[in-house]
Image 1 (cartoon, rainbow over the protein chains, first blue to last red):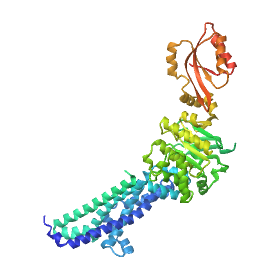
Image 2 (image 1 turned 180 degrees about the vertical axis):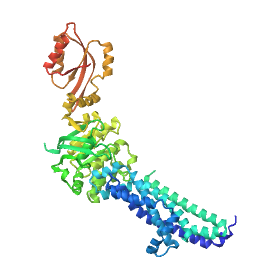
Image 3 (image 1 turned 120 degrees about the horizontal axis):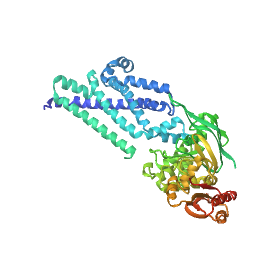
Image 4 (image 1 turned 135 degrees about the vertical axis):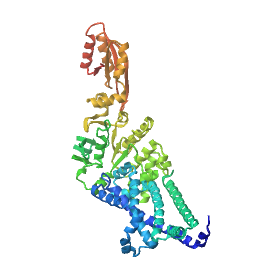
Length: 221
Length: 343
């Protein structure tokens, strides 16, 4: 294997690593916050739950299901008018981060919902029985009780987001995806492709290990 | 004695989606006096859990009124209900402790909800943990505790805001007999030392026996019998109450036992109800002697309920003279001694 191409472009590689990390982390935070709100709303409005409301629950669920099945590359293309309106560009890391944040938010919503549904309804009842308000139960009981599964869920999403950053390389999104495509694939430089793949594997592994560790700490096992 | 809880014609019907509705509580009227321990007993599905949740408004009744400490819960707003709930403690079969909080954190939670300042919260938490004997486990997490310890944390949490009323939903059903006794005696202390009124929901007669002053028997959403524990144990009126009493006291032979007894005892098998009435045994003896009935003790048991004797003794009765056994039984009935022929 010839790594001379990689050695010649090591500056570009380094910048690409940072771009990927930046896109992934910012997207995780933004989609994490939006998804947490949406997922918590899904959990809370589930019929029979704290804010049980069949209509709102159905509506949020419908929107989430509408966006979720769209393959990310197609989503990227479909979202360009919105990108223009909000971040005034359709290429580069900012535009890509915006797109990933939005796409991932809907996936996060489902994962948050699933994590919270696994919280023992008994503890919610115990909190209701001492006179806690519904909102304080959501924030003070349900979220802390579901924190372990939530962290594992976010770890799972982080890996999906790293995958999305690479796909965004196709539309000039920057990062390791673009590096692998324009310096590797288009110039038949397999050394560069494999280095990019290795870097992504390392990022994913580190993310997974950190997530597992954090979840273990929270769940104390 | 003041009435703390007053249920009047309370019903609760659950609508099942696309199915028949289920009436869990059906026209229940029941009063609980301040300072007493009332046990509500019934098989699963009898409506006990729904009944207790009507008392702290976790469920809203379909009909009827629920008054606690003079307040009609059915007329309160959500905010007022939260206030009312903070004055009613509750413990659960599965303990329902917050896994994300330490023992102390669990106990402090209701105080936090009530807006109690940190210093006072810590003081009260320590006081409660001391009361339930878990001060040394304050920083442990629930999963590090045994079942009995978890329920003691549950009790401390339920009492944090000094409620005058404690609801126990099958609080000992997940515990072994020894731990059950330990938790029940703690609940007794809560009642006697702190003056807290307690409503216990259970399907275990043993729990009733150890803790209750009065018992209400529920069947199919209705309260079919209410009375002092001693009265219900010594003289259950309804079939449901009779079944429960038998299950706890084991002093009457089961159908299988009767069949086995029959093999060796051809005479009539009669169970005599034992109460703490003075001179009971003498009356029994003299009735048998007078009619020249030979009584062979074949089964039975006598125990204590609320420091009073209760039980049943089964005799095989034989007599040379025809009709003597019947005459003896008539005499016993006339003397106020209850007997049952074991068929």
